[in-house]
Image 1 (cartoon, rainbow, N blue to C red):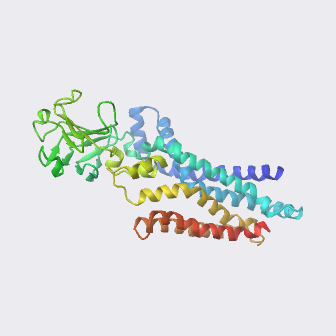
Image 2: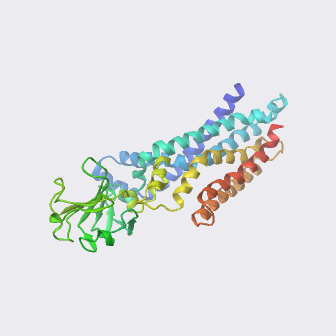
Image 3: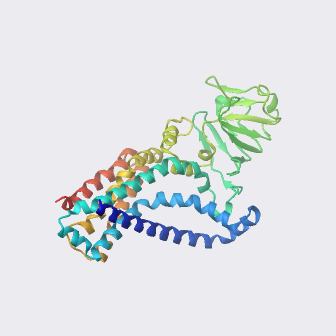
Length: 376
């Protein structure tokens, strides 16, 4: 137990130092690069310190999620190398302590970090993902973003627009190309603005179009219905609508409509599964791949650690710098394997499930083979 506490404390110190160093380097460089934007925003909203704390506080969570596997490995290397440098590793082995016993607290610590990252990925990041879409020069989300045409695959309506704004979840100058079975109003619906609204007792989820220009008599027209469900609701049957407004039902959210990668990259697994089942969205292979990768990520994190730990705790005696160099090369090979497999899955070279599982099926046996001398 004393050995566990000693090595765990060394791991914790190393983890904090590496994390703070890397995060500080990234955030200081980014802050100085965008300082004019922060100062300009602080002049409108208050303290510069509050602006920086809000902006980088959320990104600290993202940074932990993105770097935790590598930092866990680096912490293990530093902690075990420190034991080796001060001949404590030799003393422990001479006292009859096995290499597995020495490596056990390192592996447990890495597992705890991996679980913490998974919890953050599923519970914390989805709640703050909207902040990741706002850059330093658009902290309020009011800047216009380009809008690429996107289909609602359930209704077959093609959404086109001039621009979109994250603040208020609005789309500027929407022009909706209507399919033939919804063409009673004409080939398209033109409006000044569209705002996404969640489902309520009055209407399903969808977009509220204001300042409708085409058709000009929208207020007098009857709703458009498809499959027994109202797709376009007008003021003729919905008293909650204002003049020159109509409501277009759509199960595609604002984030999904503007093509933001935030909703898929930073959504929880239940949201990703709901998106796959959503007939309106028509997701690509990247979303099923991300679901599989989410499930396997903790196992891959542990495989990375198990590939690195034997370089220091194994029976082969290497210099610290040689072990660190080999660890860096092994980490590069690890990520090339993972990212390459994912890229081939997105490129439809094989299925999404294979793209996520092949790295684990390749690297886990290699990690077990590399760690085998520690069990002896």
